[in-house]
Length: 225
Length: 225
Image 1 (cartoon, rainbow over the protein chains, first blue to last red):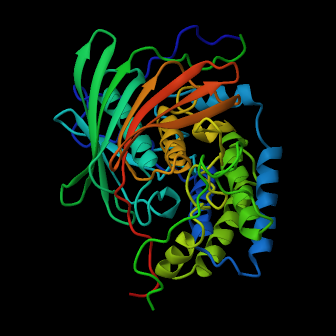
Image 2 (cartoon, chains in turn cyan, brown):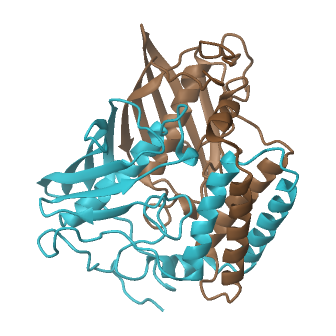
């Protein structure tokens, strides 16, 4: 059964229709999958910090393997899962930056500002480390790419990243509040130019980015075909 | 006690001293922390695929919370842990791209080629998804930034990313073998120019990158001071 031939139109809020401070990313829900994902995030972080000589570490590994096996045994068929994952209002819960169902994501909550920009706050810990005590340069690029996409949606634009030019001005510290901000600045047919930056609490810009997005989206999965 | 005042000199292999095919990243070890991390990676992936209505999901969340609490209770002091993490021969085990102790990492194994390039193979799954069925553009940037750094080391250069210019030519598919390749191409004093790409098995280039690194490293943590 084909539910629809075209990608679903999202009811994504935009700066012209929604108030200052509108949350543009998914929020945590009081559901077992969110709770399990939040716990998995704690496990990832703690595995980088825990005592390597702890005699119980073998038992913990066994327990994690059993949990993984249970979750895998109860996994949906991939096509079905892909359909469900991409169903709904367009606010993804599974992406690796803001997704509450993805333990890779910090996750960042991004809000729209009345001036057309968007921003999110985050504190990053050891899993995101590059140089000693600082955020991995590729992680900064990942966060920026995603938040730029949110800025496009807030501006009423959309599209896939075509160019992402990242400039690293100074190392981005772990364990400190960071702001990831972005804003769509140009529109030319199917192309959207978007800029963004990662700032410290005092406003110091550590990383900036200038990107081009092209409205050439991948269709959402359809049920059956 | 200060063990040494300067960053440790690494014995990192280079194209002029090591043979074709030399592995430049960490390898899995038969240790509980590696096994637990590999299991955590399976949990992250399975949480995105598992049946959201599974009545046992609450119990799994409880188990993951208990595992996290145990690991956190046995975590080392952060300064001590940072020292240990950065001790040794310079092949990190904890980074978010190649680290066998970091569940965020796929992890990619990177090998040096006699022509001066490096490459790694990887198959990415749902946690790394951007558009439906494809790799997140920011994840491609993350993998490339890291592998470019490995290419610099193989060329005998080093440094932090100053500029990372990523070009997206076509979507990068999930669930297919990908090659992430890189090569240092220019040296000018403290600056190294490095290029890289993500290719499909048939050689099609999906993403390419042109980057500049500057030899301005963050010192490794010292014990005491």
